[in-house]
Length: 327
Image (tube, rainbow, N blue to C red; front, top):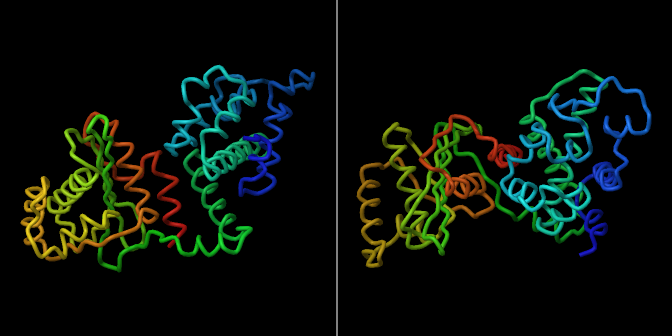
């Protein structure tokens, strides 16, 4: 892979590409670099975390503020903070990321690094401070708009328009998106569900680990069970349940014959519960419209217990923001 060609290939503003080029060539005017060039600076302490020396590598990877931004995306967190990158230079670190990430994910990383640098400059020159979560949401919202309006090929633009986006429920109705993760080698996984209202506002999310799973279908059914239990316990109806499993949706809504598979008893139990919940509707959604629940289920596989959230955790912020932008 040609590293430099890859960097210039990503679909982000040229100003962000130039910023990453400066990072790669070690010409970013960090406080440590300015001091090394005999520029008089009051302190070399990082403007963002106010703890460690402000070097280029620190700003791009090791700063606690930067981590708050990058940790929100599980793909970036896993790649950017892979243990084997701990002692790499900033250029070698970016080479590693470019190799491991998709072209879109690499673009996300580059644009977020630029957003972090702009926040650093705002603190230096304008004395303005913005929380990491706001930098993340604003950056991803702007990047989403940029990509939509700057697709180079008409066919790519058409494909983007055909991608199904998350849609809010009608007024007076709630929507819960569910998903399950499954790892065949361990028969473990996780479940996730997210409930939002007609304005797209995050009401509650839940996720937890799963074990002794038989299949991805089993994980999806477990997610459905967890969401249904929460809905019934808190009397949250009317409710639309969205699953990206066509098989599960059909079996719970249109199946005319009893399910004789190994999961038949699970389906029977769910159908019995649904009979007493006439205001719960089950629909199918494509994976593109179910990203928040998918990310939560993936993350929940590593949880030690079931967790509930009354507002989006850091690792969901970018996906929740993207759904809001698509409304």
